[in-house]
Image 1: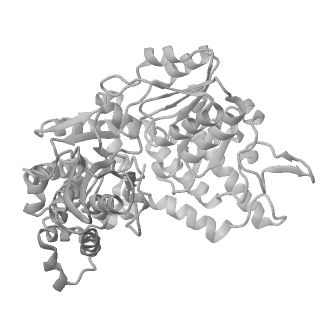
Image 2: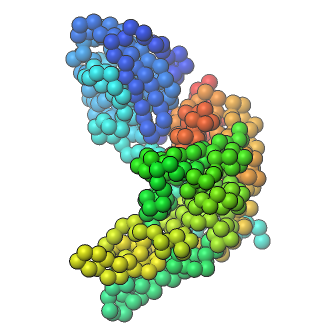
Image 3: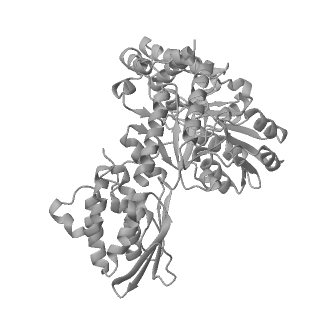
Length: 160
Length: 404
């Protein structure tokens, strides 16, 4: 499988210079997201004004896919309501698992750059780490989110 | 005859079917030679019955195959008394057996368990859980900057309260070969029991477990050309006899009364239920195969290729290799490449057929001590050649171009 589709220029660029890569002291939600399989960890901050995401930012360590995905996500959800953000996550998840019809992909804007992930099932966890964190941030109180506890995912990457 | 002449990649059907594959993840699991698959097939096709049970010739044959497999594996690792070799599912189960059956009986409040900072989770978490349950304490020996056990620090941790010293013979993440005799001497002075995780040693080094003088020694079959699901625990006879069983049920009992039961003799006391004869037969065939090559030849071949890989990697800008010099290392090279995340590196390498492990290698405490979230790990075995090292280096160069 060619990795060119995975590491598109936009992904590499967001990996090099992630957007919204900062702490947010006045956040209304702070969530730790972890991928125990590869040790990736990020902190996501979300500022809610009524029902709208006024600001989102993140910091942490991870692969290019998880970092670029977090970067693109924080930019994409700003100004969205909770329901809109959840709906976007739904479509994003379909994109990276290869189940989103071509006709609907346009609506995802720059998030489409992560479409190549669908050809690399082991990397779906990386692409969705920030989104799972966002989902938890919107749904609950401050806590820790792990991709391991979320819905059906590809088989584990790590052995011994 | 050199080690290289004794090894034939064509013995391995998976490698033969994938000539462009560069399998550099043998520390996770090895590929299997045809003779191992044949031995298992032959067992099921000709000798399969439940051993130790049936009063008929076929069951007796299955019992013989199982006993022969145990004796063959025991002799391969230098154990004369094969009854002290217990079959398990693998190293993880072997270590859990010791931490549970021996540990729960012998470790109490105020006691201490000493481990090292480079342990695999399988030789870390069972001890951590044991001390938490018992109100005992876990002491973790420091490492030197090049990833060896700091023996002075280890010695300072071992004292009158130390019940167990548990340590890896060879580190799975760095390949460090630890000085088993030195660690055992430190433990013995304090009267502590020693538990050695040999998962990364048994496949790669000539082994004389009787001579090592450890109390417990564990390894897995699947990392040494055998099937998954079959491993070994070797214990000192007097300790095994004094310990309670790990699991109870069929095969492991002597007499079952309404209120209490008595246990079968070693090794059966620790092998409850129908044993995994087919896999034991496969592992015995793997030992046979390795013996034909000769473990000193295996070591020589791996050391040559690891030395080459380390040297070649060090010429690539941005590459940092972790762990001690190749002379003190098994066939493992753990490394990072500049700012490229190991996970991304592994994906790029996969594109050119190079399989490496990326991540924390089930050794998160070690990664914290190295202060890296993850590394890439190339691990070599008898079937790897210079061509695999070439492909690895070319793949890394390609990754550097992609990530500029």
